[in-house]
Image (cartoon, rainbow, N blue to C red; front, side, top):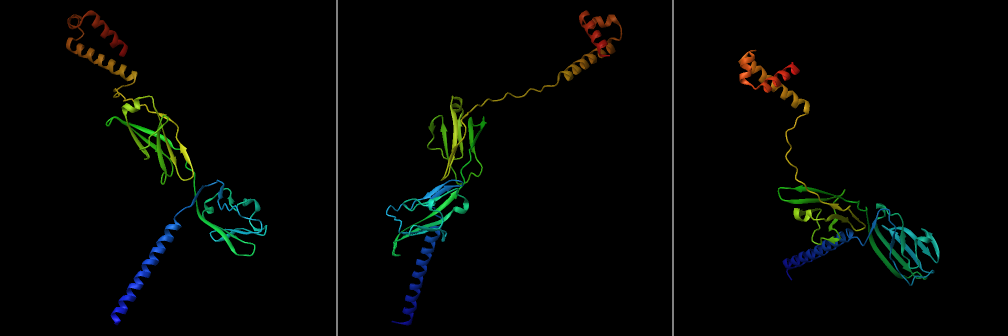
Length: 270
């Protein structure tokens, strides 16, 4: 075999090893981001070792991120509390916090020290979702009502919509649009949000859309009366300018009632 062939085979072997290592690293990274169990902050949770053959003479150890949190050997508890473990070796966690998340592992040995059984799992801790608030806007241009399921920290949540008691199975977005015809009917809408550990629903809302009439240009009563009085006074002055104070000429321009009314108004104003 030539030197060139040796180099080629060595190169291919190194390439194969590199691919295997990259695949293993990717697997470990994916495993690191995978959660086997989910718990809510403040919740109690049992990690299910569920080993029914567990005996008092067995040695049982639980670790959290490789730190020993429970150790019992021949009925003697050296680390942790006896009440934290049930008869099957399952571990009870109380008042979960974000620091409770991580990798847990349970291992059992026979009384002679030989390995018997183990369990491991990754716990992820999340906040419970808050109660959402349903708001809506009437869009008269598109003849539709646009609903929004408002909630703080909306990322990573699943949404659902309900009309009366019927779930809209195809609607899974944070927003929903319905026609005016649907909104006019006596229906009540609500939305729900959920994550891995909790679910909350909004209050039911009846949609009401009324198109407002254009606002009229209105002024306070005092301003209106002042304008009317000013206009009447101006008319009276124009008549006087044209006719002078001659009663005969004024009577030709106005009826007796109109003349007397303008005269009384002028006296009241001035």
